[in-house]
Length: 365
Image (cartoon, rainbow, N blue to C red; front, side, top):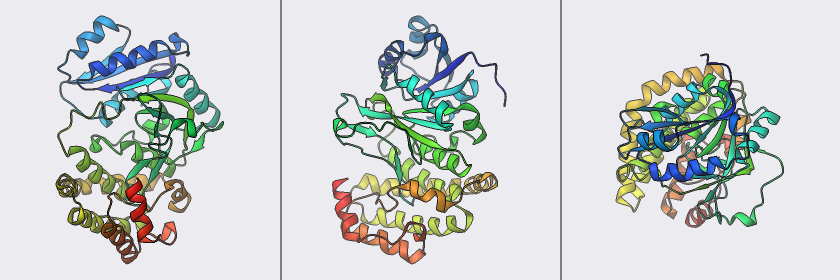
């Protein structure tokens, strides 16, 4: 795919749906960027908003490039359209409910240029800046991603001087090399929302690319501000479905089958043992949705295998916390370990921990 010659250093790409109140704050923060204004393009994808977003942008921010659709297409598809339309080497994908530090964009561009990383992530802080929401990605071997240092006091963890390799970076604030992003297929649009950033990072590593966390670049996030438009339980069902799809697509073929069998068995255990009816329903809905998507996911897995440049053993250390359990409770923690051992799915990650420790960690998580 080709695009017009680059007219800026970076395109800032923001998908939104009925998020005008969030966009006001986000765009105000972008006005204060230290990066030269004539080297930044701002693009917004309006997902069928009914709150006057398009009219407000035309009146108050006429320089913003607006793309859109008549309906809500989620997060992944609109981000892909924004990256495809970008006229710069780098694209910074932002949630509409973040504020961006004045030097953040310049820092992300500098790190990408210096490291050659295909994807660079910002440190995501709570709205008041007191706590960390995301500082690098971890993932269980079942495909469930999680943020590093989530909830930790930000002053207790000063950013390292150098960027750190990470399996994935947060879609709330990520800089991508446009060509590498598109060559990898971009975000998987069948995910709709959630874990598309986990899947993208994992795929990039399989292709021989690199993802790094640049924690000196900071954004402040109004947590869950942009996901209130989803029906109750929809988020949990998407997390369960998309984790299964990532397992199918991104492991080497011999391991994918074992891990998928284990993942399906453990999803059934989560439905059985979850104390929250919403979680139980989400497990059922996630399983049914994943089953419908499996044939297409298998075809995508073929493409991942064809482009693979790194093996699972090289990527596994980036999982950081492969034994993390998706729900709390000692009964589930014990089943988590027992089922993994039964299916031989965990041989890549070393001996499983004591289930009691997993239970204790899930209580603290």
